Amino acid sequence: GGGSVSRQSLVDSRSQTSLVLGKGKPLHSAQATSLPSPMRVPPVLQFLGYFKEAVHESNLENHRIRKCEIFYYLEDDSIQINEQKTENSGVPQGNFMKRHQVPKDEDTFYTLADIEIGGELTLYGRTFQIIDANPSTKSYLKFKEDGSESVGFPVDKFEVDRAALMSRETGADLTVRHNIRKNPMKNFAEAALGNTCDNSGREGFLKYDRKVLRFTCFWDDREALYGDMQKFKLHYFLTDNTIEVLQIYGTNCGRDPYPLLIKRAKIPKSLDDEAAGFYHWSDLDIGTLIDVYGRRIQIVDADEFTREWMENEGIPLTAPLQPPEDEAPKFERILPPYTGYGSEEDSLTSCVGSLVQTAPKKLPGTDRTLRYLGRLKSAQPEDEGREFVLQFFCTDNTLAIREPPQRNSGIVGGNFLKRGTSQVKDDYDNPITPGSLYIGAEVATQGYVFVVTDSDDSTLKYMETEPETFPYSDYNAVISRWGRVIAAIHMAEFEEKAEKIASETGLLSLSSLKSLLSDYQGLCEQPDQAPITVMRKLGNGEFSVSVEALMQQLKASVSAYNVGGKMY
Image 1 (cartoon, rainbow, N blue to C red):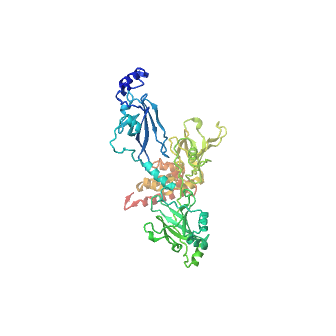
Image 2: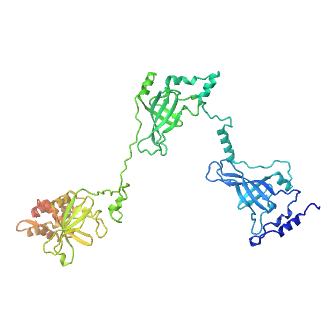
């Protein structure tokens, strides 16, 4: 008619005056030609919808219903979304998407034709379920209702639980008892107006006020995983027959300082049988097991007041019990082995575990110092005649070498190798131990080779007391080896050679004994420590031995290995 304007002409006029955005996209969409044209066009269409948002890492809910209002503006086909605010939701709500034309694809935008009640609308990756619209929008769209009720929003578990919580907390739910004690003035005012007061609970207050029974208990939970032996204090208040249980903490127990296990209340004897009642002071005795909500706590002792009061009531307490106790674990710090990087003292400093770091003393041996005399094994003529004193400290396996000064030698004596702070090693990166040093041994360190030529008497005595460390100082082992090597068939020959060498005095010196042993395979390579050990044993401290005594020991060692006519 003349009063109405065709939708096609209205769209054409709008498209002719529309602005053009980037890439030639019109600001107004031409897809609105198929929209209905009511008599009164509302400026904004309002739809109700929601979308589901997943909730991770929560045991109360797995998704949340986000309720929204979708506004469609007919003048420029723009869309705006507002989210309804929910109290204490923890989500910022309000303007969810500001008003603008929402692109549908690269060339078109969303229009009213894409919005349908009961359908879905996907904007920027979120899918909105449109469930309803306001009356003006329905009238404009000529939406025909079939008489059934609208679908409505789905049930949100968070809203249901929150509503139930607020109903309990605010008192709207009359089935929930908050156990709020009345103000004493209110009771007094009601009594003044004629209300009868219940004084049944005041008998204990008047008779037993400020009287508390105190028991010592323990709970043995060591059978459970990570269980422990825990001690408690049990307070029984005679005023209202309530019980309080506090935990007793030991030194360095590692538990949080919250000793209250059970606050003051009546404790039921059984959680399954209400007819069993609550614990009374007459049920408490030394050795009694109390079930405190699943914890089997045993009473082992009581204080002096409790014992006196219970005895006056005709229930004397028995002697205290000793709860089982575990021995405190003893921790021994084991120092790690030296890695070879840096000094050993610097490495041990990191094992102290203190702000004031001091390297712990590592004592692998005894407090003894071994002294030896040595010379350089060198082909240089200037090294001939140089003597050195080698000091080995068994406390930490360190070595110090000094060169005694010699007149007109051209070499300044003094410290040749200063004692270090870590265990000394040879040139082959092997640790030098006390067993590495003996007369005749060669020690290579700091690029020099030292040959041990002599030792003092105290060192030799110590070596003879440690045969496992110094095998060449073991007299029995040395003489037995000599006897096995010489054997019975060569014994007469050996005795004849010995008597010939010692024909004048009958004594063998160290050099003559070494030359005598050099003729036998296996004895010529042994160090000088072995003959020195034999001469110290048979020569009564003198470095000479009689042929007669030596032959007696050799024959005795040979006969010890002659079993059944066979030589072993």
